[in-house]
Image (cartoon, rainbow, N blue to C red; front, side, top):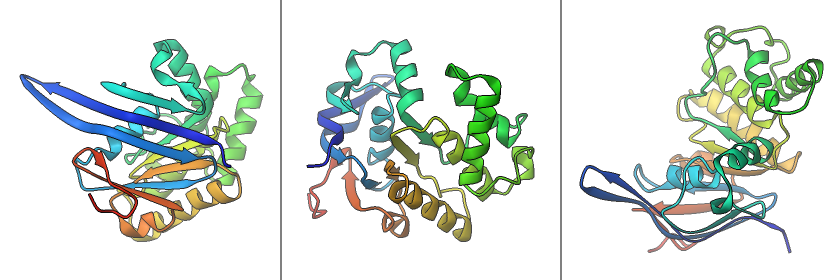
Length: 230
């Protein structure tokens, strides 16, 4: 039996806007095994990005249970969550979220500044990560000097530089042309297959979802059964 790395039980999230209560996620039971490549699909507003943010401990649930890598996220302090996330989770954003005044190498090195590694060790790790994503010749380039696909590769290098067990990607191809998107999907698949990373990707693109080994569909905050029917 494969180890369960993500487990939610009746997980719900509500937001309050003025006097309105908005249910983003309702009673979601999800299980992800180690080494899976999971796609979370659904229309805009279905709750898929909310679920990803809860898994990353970037948001807190209104109710329900969530365990990631054996850790009950609801029992951790803010400081402990930050440390846990930096050690265990690599997050890839649709908008890259690179710092424009830093080079590719400096952007990738950033998460390592929260570790005990010395400067040269941090640089060595960052170079290795950039080479892995095919950007060993772009170390000194700034984001503005890179294509969108290259920026997303830098973002992926930053996500994997701490060697996390879990990679979470929120519409990672949403801002890319078709060729660059294909490259990014192949890179995520390689990280999953060759390096054993568990990958959870939010996407609305059926082509992107075909790279995943497991596909879940959300609709109006609810996780649909695996056959896709309510």
